[in-house]
Image 1 (cartoon, rainbow, N blue to C red):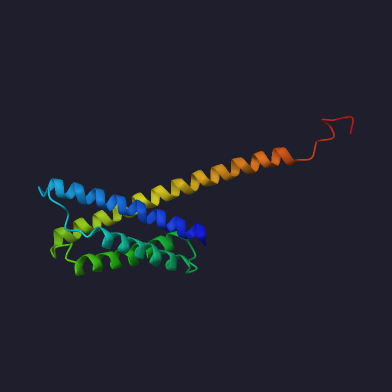
Image 2: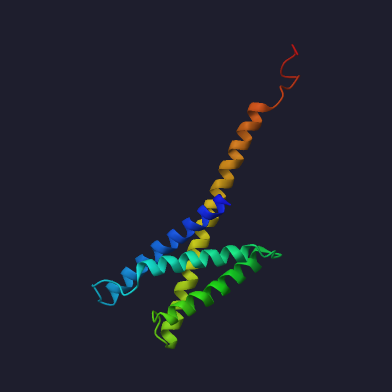
Length: 148
């Protein structure tokens, strides 16, 4: 459980960093050089909430990883979109909704790629350590040692 919480918290932190960087970039491109109108703590709480919902979704026994990812993307999209609409962060016109949707999908894909690469690196390290352990603990082959 501790590992799951740390993994989810690191995902929220990565998302938080990406959202703040994009917010800064958006402010620069739009000519708004003052502070952002986005409350930073509220963004972090929203992202931790998204990770909590994603954890609850992960408890559902999906048949395939694709089903899980589709459900996760859809549910979190609705939650984030509703939060952003309620807080007035997304103007209610077609172009801003399309930009929001594209940004959401790009963020999701980047986070997915990051954690897939992290899991692959952990699996490769685990396999390397397992192979090393096997070499250290395997019984000596009698053909290699005629004395035995």
